[in-house]
Amino acid sequence: MKAQKYIFSSRGQIAGKHSHVLNRLSLPGRLLNSAFLIIIFFTMALPMWNVVVMSTSTALDASAGGIRLWWNQFSLDGYFYVFETAHLLRPFLNSTYVSITGTVIQVVLSCLAAYVLIQRQLPFKNAMVSFIMLSMMIPGNLILVSVYQLNKALGLHNSLTGLIINGLISGFGILLMRGYFVSVPYTMEESARIDGASDMKIFIHIYMPVSLPGVATIFFISFISRWNALMLPATLISDQKKYTLPLMLKTMILSNSSVTGVAQTPDNALMAAIVISAIPLLLIYVFAQQFLIAGMTFGAVKE
Image (cartoon, rainbow, N blue to C red):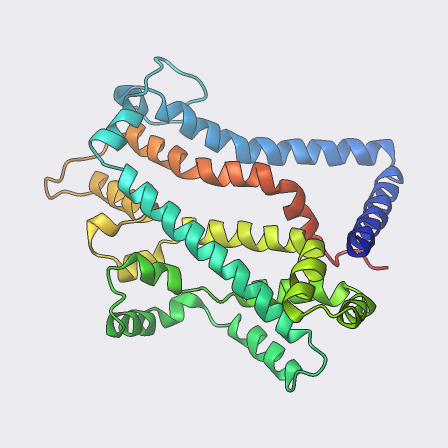
C-alpha cells in the first residue's frame, strides 16, 4: 500500500508539472500546437485509411492504383482470399504463438535480472550494467550469419522455438526495469525483511506493483518487435508451414513482382493481409496506452 501511494504521488507531481507548462502557453502557441498535431494525425491516418479502403474494395478497383479514400464498390473478397486461398490463418497463429510466448518470457527475465542488479551486495554490479549497455550497441543484422549457424547447430532451424528463444534477453528491458526498481525507497525493502519477507515476496509485493508501467512498456515494445520481425524468421524458417505473418506478407508481395508464372495475389487481398496484421497491434495499444505513456516518460521530468 505504501509503495502504491508513493508511485501515485509521483505520477501526480509529474502530471501537475506537465499541466502547469501547458497552461503557460499563449493562445497562438496552443493553436499552433493543435494545428501541428492535426497535421501529424492526418499524415499518419490517411495512408492507413487508404489501405483499409483498398482492402474492402473489389480486385479491379484496388488494382487501378492511386490513393483511394472512399469506395466505388464495397467488397470483402480480399479477406476471403487471404484465408481461403493464401491460407493466412496458419502464419497468423504462428506469429501469435511466437509473439505472446516470447514476450511473456522476456518480461519475466527482464524483471528478474533488474531485481538482481539493484542488490547492494552484488559484486561487479556497475560492470554488468556497462556490459548490458554495450550489447545494445551491436546491430542485430551484423550477427545474422552467426545466429543462423548457432541455431542450425542446436537444431532450432525451421522451428518456432528458435524464434522464441532468440532475443529472450532484452538489454533495454533490463535497464528500464532497473530504473523503476531503483526509484523504490530502500526502507520499504528493509521493513519487509525485518518482517521476515523473502526475496521473492519482496520482488512480487513491493517492486512489481509500482513497476507496472515499465512492465507494460516492455511487453508492448517486445510484442511489436516480435510481431513485425522479418529478418530473423527469413533467416531461420524455410518451411512454409512455420511461416510467420511478416514472412507470409513478404511472399505475397514478391509473388506480385514475379515473372516466373507464380499466381499473383490481388491487391485488395494484399491490403487485407496488411490490415489483419495491424489489428493485434492496435488492440494492444488501446489497452496498454495508459501504462505505455507512463513507462516511456519515466524519469523525463527533472525534480
